[in-house]
Length: 243
Image (tube, rainbow, N blue to C red):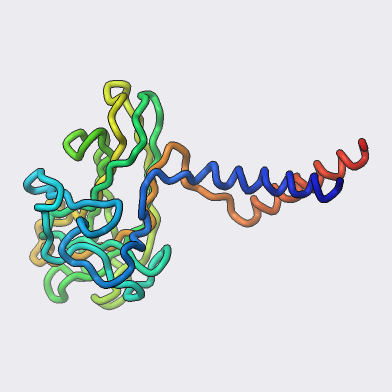
């Protein structure tokens, strides 16, 4: 009987953690295909496709000059061994339309990790921040619900490993007018449009572990999990006394 209640309490704690991190995105940490570096965009990346912000087109016809996936193991990633990277002058986004159909009245939550990877020395580097723009959309990238520009600060490293990883989060109210359409997201390096300094076109920014869901992506810290476990033990003790 003791073991039964302990297992039940542990299962409840695990369920609470999982309920807070139901990611609607496929390949959210850019681990697939997990072979070599891809620098021509995101059409060869499972779950994602390329969207040209400058030309408002998407799909197989959109290519990049140097945006895509870093080779497995070439970067110190947040999750796994690969991440996405974006060159400012490409103006090419990584886009994904999820299978989730908007009901209207929900709140979507977005989080991702990002850093400045590289900027050409003696021009833009290391004096300005970069900018990642993230759009949450309905149906396709034309149907933008929310558009966020987020500054990605320079770090203290060399130009080959310039910035530090930081997490960015925001929420988006999904309007009833978009009900019936699929929820989607795209991300790209927007530094070319935000800053006009010389060399900004040669800005590369990394992104990893992108989250899009209907619940916050915050997973309880170990201390919180410990409290849940203690609560479970207390529940087991109470029921044991009642038996």
